[in-house]
Image (tube, rainbow, N blue to C red; front, side):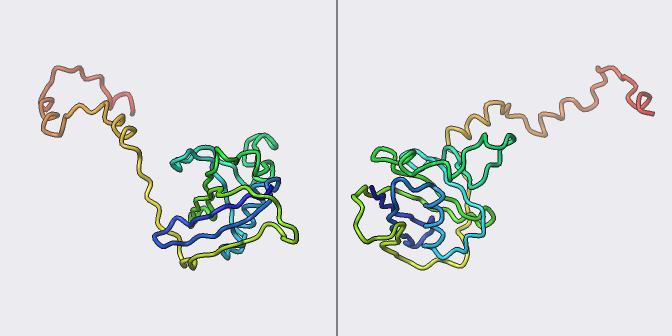
Length: 180
């Protein structure tokens, strides 16, 4: 089978590529197809991230095993596309170059039969030119998560702490004596 992906650059303008690739190819093959399709040199590190239907990032699938125990962490070359993407699970996030953070939304758009005479992977459609720099990323916590950080808020400010000034009711433990 052939997987047809729409790979969209996370940018203000419409910049995307449609890529056809064999279902039994690996994520590493898709990585190669993406960076070639968008004109990168392929010299930077990249990762795929599984995600839910609303593009919330989940598990990382890196290019290289960066785990503490060699061979313990699965990499792009360990996953066939059909292992993690199908008609129900159609979305994955791709990040190229962790300095520039080129971020792409990759969606499985169709699963079709192999066409004779076609060499896969193949860029079948291209829209937009790549900008010279990646979009600046703004990392924002979900509203429900940010509220949990306020659970220890006691509404005290500097003026409230003034009530302890001049209070000699505590014992002097000779702090200076113990540190000389």
